[in-house]
Length: 606
Image (tube, rainbow, N blue to C red; front, side, top):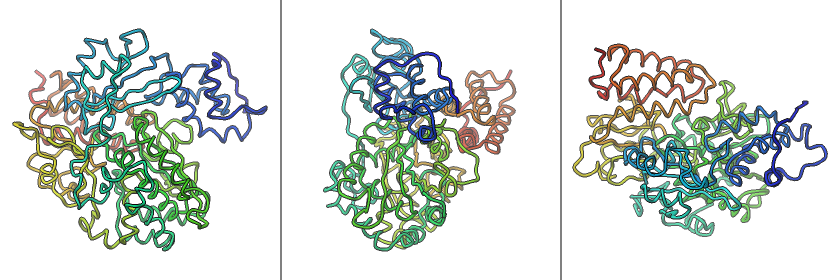
């Protein structure tokens, strides 16, 4: 492959940053299969440049492309795909202020209006060019809304998650100080003896492998090695464990398919890129029980014959990334990862990959492309990941919540696990409760608990307010009315109200909330997050937002009924013809709200 690199050259500092990730260049570093085989290092290298400099210059991008033998246009396409990367000079200190639905419900609009008044519009540099603030989609800090994310580039780059922010605290962060430290989690059920997935959260030191072991950690891995890979898969199948990421696919069936694939190697991917607005459960598990995630991944790898694993963590989760890296290092040091694990012939290791601000990378094949150093665009199926996944090899991919069920299933047996919950929805489920609720936080309840019971557990709506609606499953989910609160929270139960559990979002809106504005924000989210690869989604999300904006302005082109018919037609096209779940669900919550509520009442053409 003959590549011609022209244009800007990297600075000495940029060269050093890239070489620190890729190693010193050799005489033949500008070509060959060996260089091309390292394309999967493109995303980590771009992260390194952005963390040190604050943005990715043309010279740095050229140098990265040349070192990895990636066409410059490809490298640019990847760098420009992610929201956290800037390709023009940007202040090294950036505060990303969430304006998504959970934070809007807790006053984010007023904060943003005040920031625009006091510090200029988003993207401006209010002081000497060293700081700026930006609007951001959901940051996964919904239980502490309104929220922000602070990133600081330089010799010692760092990032902080900021919860419960106001104009004053954001101003302090912009001025170079005042990074308020908040508890890493809010767990209203702390101390509840009935907890399973959350029983160690707030009780066991997340930095200590000894504390994890004293709390029963790594007993499940030892048990798995005793009963063998087929025994683990049998227990998972008997447990009837369904995927917790939204698709609800039988986990045992997926693992069995990967294990039986003759092609080698096999890969395991833990999808920790939860970017669904209103979701934060995987973040809390990684921050507060990281060794459980590592142990679960190791058991899964043993069962599926995976030789290597990737933990793909959302880019806006610095604490989770830090604690997971520490847990991986400690697991290797104590022979729970690496070669000959626990004295057996089982070899397995895990590498962390950070996302960079792209909701679409939560889709499994988009995530594969991201790890491989391509734009995070979805692939057509079939083939499915169990046959041709990461690097074209058989791959098991599950999210964090799904995997952390594994130790209990292995220790107690699949039948005991299946006895919890209902026949078709077994075990317990984590729900991310936020919005206009008295006690926002992460809740664990058995499947079959009603929505009313869950909201009561969370303290109900705020004092002197009336419940208006509940969004189930996030922006890709559907709305429930106050009359539907007795719906059991099961995969089959919510289908009766044309809803979905999705990623466990339960976002509460009281009577103060303008539901029409929330729908418009959901439409803007999908328009912005569409990767643009397929026409139905690329165009449909824009038309959907335009239509809702017309209704909000009370300037419909047709009657309200005709506009609703048009919206349904746009949604049907996206559902039927989009490549992936983003386009297929982009209209779900909006159509649900219009069917059950009257958010644009009066928007009738004269």
